[in-house]
Image 1: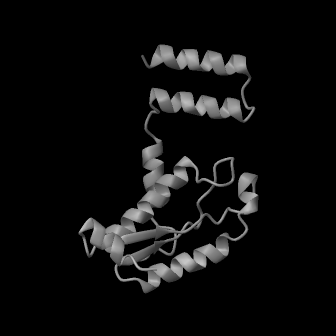
Image 2 (image 1 turned 120 degrees about the vertical axis):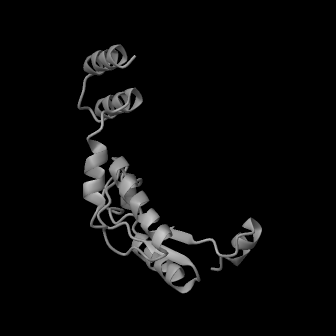
Length: 148
């Protein structure tokens, strides 16, 4: 696989290409149980990134899935984003979890949720059966009152 054509089309011959690994949680739960070939795909992605000029590989080690078992959850998206930034800014492969991830995520998690984020949390709890419809409705009403 060559990225020459893409770089020519964009008229940026040296643009870095970052390739992210598929989640290690695949083949475990939910719809992801059927994604049993992810290890083989990850080996190919890594090989491409290591053999292409100005191309970098980012690990998905330690990332966790949404309940669907396929997509990464919000915290893992943030961690993956940090890894992508590390690969892009330092132009190097990121093959392990970054030492600063937990600290950065912890700091960002301390902030107050927005109204939409708060409603989303309640929606997820309702969808997962952790709240009744009545509890969900009451909680969303309170959020709307407090964050208007």
